[in-house]
Length: 112
Length: 113
Image (tube, rainbow over all chains, first blue to last red; front, side, top):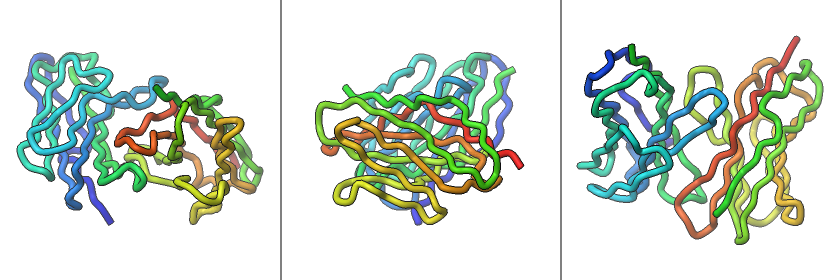
């Protein structure tokens, strides 16, 4: 089975800090995605990547950036964390859509 | 553009009762359809999917969903739920030539003893 590993399950950071959320997949998937999940708002796409060094903005990219230097790793960066970025962050990867996405376990980030 | 509507944000049901979670999508082209389940404090797991062929698809834990093209629906059903089915369920759709899934807002299934 494909595994998508997110480096932290729970994270607490201070306002203004630079925050890195790491995601690694082990099945040579081309596509990787970052979502945030908030009560009542469902899943919202932040950024995605179809290939190494390639990135595309999703629906809510403001305040975030990403890095994909290697195929298996897709990092989400909060340049200056704010309290409104407190959320559950989910990473996903896929080879092709018909096989669906494989999600990581999520990182619950709290910004204080 | 495609969109997915899950008509119920919460569905409370008693154990061993049947349940239906509704999903409607809008798309002008052929689609692939998915249901994902999210247990508390976990990521999403693929429950079942429709790609082509039989319009009725089943999961290993007793859920089934039926693709209805004329009604653009993909409702999820289970004839008898267990406490362990308590989770949030997400419907998703993709254009069959694309790489992206569009997710519905989710339905929280709450199974009561």
